[in-house]
Length: 566
Image (tube, rainbow, N blue to C red; front, side):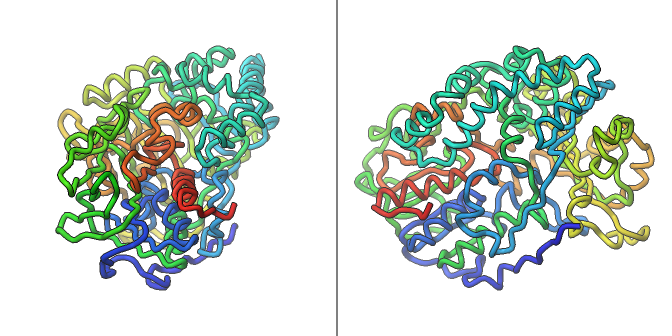
């Protein structure tokens, strides 16, 4: 079993957060303690800036954090990391020295349906993936279609991977595209205007495969598989072949924990439990921030590491600031408003997460029937398993979610993170029942709206998801549940401060960055001197990447004639 490091508690770091005395001034104030805000703070502090990070919640990490509940450690959202492995921050910030250790996940994912559809096993190795497809589809049509897909998708995925690590300037991005010899650029532009369904169908991939791609792609933003502009999600399979999938030992929160430790080591002050009311601006320049309790922190640079739609500005000189901003980012009524997302996202929420302590690992008959050379027995519980309705049911579920209804059958993302990470196993039941080791079962349920008919107070609905899961395998799963909890969209709204459970997504994606559209979110710099945007609402978008925080720090330091050491 892979070694699991014991992470240092926050109190052992040079500058503990929470309860710190609020400083009156700083070089940079970062508003928001998600992993992008923490990455930005760490880079700036390492470059010698006096950094203060302010987080409204009592915990750092945002959607990437890990919390104590039902007797174990639970990840708020996903436990799988991919893009952060290619962002450079793990190596550049030497996060291994702060307790971060990644455990490889291979196979990287498994996909199945509710109606006996073929099972897709996604390995890091292209050839092993193709061999499995050929075994599960004796006609070999799906394997041949997947090979055609990769021939087109891999060059585009390499371009996206390279661009997201570049400081976003027209010159830098043009150089990246030139070095790629334009391979992949036409694909990126074409797929950005198409739907995921149309992109994958064009290679002859079957509907059940497209449904699986949708569950792990556009459905995570509340979109239907035929939503225009969702086509770039088709790059997901290719990107994982290039980068891989891994999980931080001890849970997803080990990443923000290490980022916080790194930032503190370099002198940053991280203060939790304080809410910023507005960014103070005079004569078009940032002067600092104001808290809801009236206290202020003076700073010539402020980084808003939160939803860009919610950044409020106090005009200290009383001069309206709207005239200084383009139509893409108005400062009317004292608020920066990000461009309308393209494609439109479902802002009525879209995901719930159920975690359970179980005395036995879940069994799924579809996986047990696979030949061991397609899926070894010891690999069945390692990756996340996507359980998908049909394409027609997914389209209906997206419409139902917008209308305040839960789609049926549900789209599920199942994993048992304790199978790979022994530190997440329990040796005794939190309720005192049963003996031996207990595993952690995690179930993300997509297509669950923030406002649902009848409300979320009735526990019968989330329990029905466990019954549906048990119907695919061993009904004894329900009896094996020792303790459980569910977090619905309203819970995410309260605990992670995401309005209507909406994680801001970058409008236009990588194309916006390539073309410089929506410059406040693709280039991070706003027309207000000293005010910068970072986080999931900026390039490269929502996911556990860290590239936005890294790139924002590079832009700030380049403007001060400093350079990051990469």
